[in-house]
Image (cartoon, rainbow, N blue to C red; front, side, top):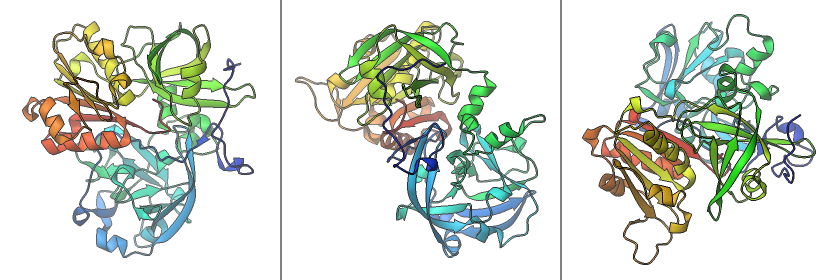
Length: 470
């Protein structure tokens, strides 16, 4: 039996009488978090095309103007993300996949999606037909924003949202082994194939259904669950060793986890809380400690949050906490990855970057690093004492957006291209960049660095929102 988190109450419920609309383990949010890797592509509409491809041959292609001339449908539907949130009654407009398929002959049973960061997903063609899927370009009455997949994305709402791919390969390969990751964009076509990527011989029916994003199987919901399964990760009970107050709204929780398998700098773990009535809530948090140190997370209390208020206000040393991890490989750094490092943090986005800096120190790496940290006010700066005592080779700069103490000599205002050019590495240094913070912050910083000439493939991003884990 999982430990009961005394005092924990669930807040984000489905509307009364509509509980069957939300899969088990999900919570309802009004937000729309962004989950993607790297800088957001911004494809000019005059360059955008959408193609249906099979066997290396383009069967049909549309320009943006031609695509928008196709019959459009309005869709109101619920969407469900594998990171536990559900959003009800979302409104979209786009072209039904049925309309697209009516214009081509095809005989492949699967559609393969090749995505940035090495991520792939697949769909049986039957899950795209019969009024079940669209290529959507309007959301909530407005053109779809780039960070949500604009100008157009796949929408398959009857499956978990990781199947509604927004990043596909522009130059479609003939086979998955020929994926050219350097040329990626948001969705611009459907690539038909004859095999189910991800399914292995001997895989059980329930596992295969989970790989397909079946909403009825929350324990096998997508890439996050597959990562845990591949690594043999299981839920374990850890004891809270200490709770350290970092700011008025932020605490660091150090855990005694005897079965912890170890982690890499920049990875996450999952926390699961169980209420007395059996309700459970799970959230992801960046690991704040370096590899080799006791595992720790730093949590900011979010207004109207469900998990963070409990962790920041109720949790005490000696309490038990269920955790699972480590999870995620994209945002990690090892000394062998080199540098120089350009670290850009917004608010609690400094957490995984602290893990990277600590890892650099513990390994004796001489990779030079620069951290630009944006916070609302000086008291809101997390790890302030530690950041002010960085070793040789690490430069830390701050910018405050809402208030500055008397005699402040640091930077003021939000991060922009001018500030990044001032404190960042010159383009010719070919810096390896990690950006973490709220979605709008990450979008601005990543776009500014790419605008300065930073190679997009060396800009790693991690976003979080009002329903995010941080």
